[in-house]
Length: 250
Length: 198
Figure 1 (cartoon, one colour):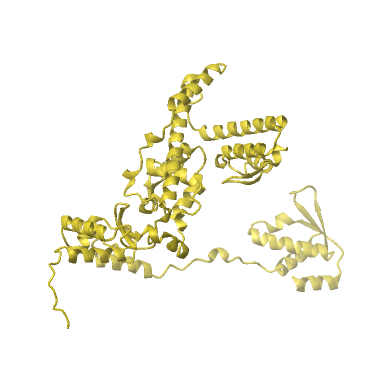
Figure 2: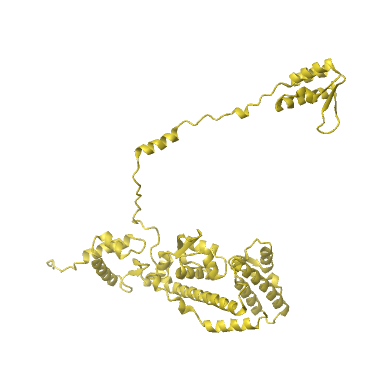
């Protein structure tokens, strides 16, 4: 008889005991929801169905249920200060008090159950009361002028939303193509950083695109000693047709 | 040949009793004496006397409709003789499959209410969220404001009293009556505590 295959049918869980343990250990099923007494009942019923006592199974079950109970007790009483500090006598007294309370509630539940069985043949009308008095909505005295002022605030035209932050102006790449070609016409090489100094970040980015275009066309060669070091631009081999194409595409 | 009409001395409360009868027919929940007094625009004493007359007229074994005092008011219900036929026509969904967990939760709320879910969980030793939600859905318990920490508290509803046939919550037996042998339990626990290593 395998304890772990014990089929359970509890309020919070339905399935084999093994799966319940897995879910509890993975914290996917709160142990506070689990009726441990229900597990014990299921096991005892299973035992009763068998003619011989399986001591191994009983031992395993006791260990598992004791662990479950301890976990659950810690979970339920974790917020209560001082309970662990009680001496055994006081702890027993506290436990007895709680068990007594629970026993009374169980007794009351049993009484309700019996009462329900007795009253099962009482039929009465259920439903919303058709003539139930309707609650009268009483509003405080209102000043019409104040209401008008509030409404006026609601109908006022909202201020125009500024779109200034969206206005990014991009200079044409061709402008920098021409500028760099002019510089290289005068000099063999130049510093990119020096040429774009004082420009906005957007303009610098466009200038860099122009630089890449010239490099692709083979008009220039680029050198950079190290990352973030100044970019040295030197005159390269010029192919007329490629330059024209790149200038147009830019 | 027609007999001449015989004059009968009518009970002076007959008119009031008929009005109360009508009010109870249109109401789908018990009506308190105060509500009847207000609706009839009459005196409480006369209304109570009229209710007494109606109770006699609509009593078990005499009529298919029975007038009963339940859930803090007066209401009509079907007589028990007609229960089987009523059962064939209707079911009582409110209390269908009330589990042990639901009954224990109801008991806690009925005796200790208004109380919050953590308080109910403390009494029962298990979390009660789903049970409480089920009982609210059935209309047996309802929210009754919030506690100090803003936690929702619950109480039983008039429907609870009606389903269980209680005139009011005062009709519940005293909780002490369900105590059992507390001393024996205490003694067993104390002896266990003494055996426990310190």
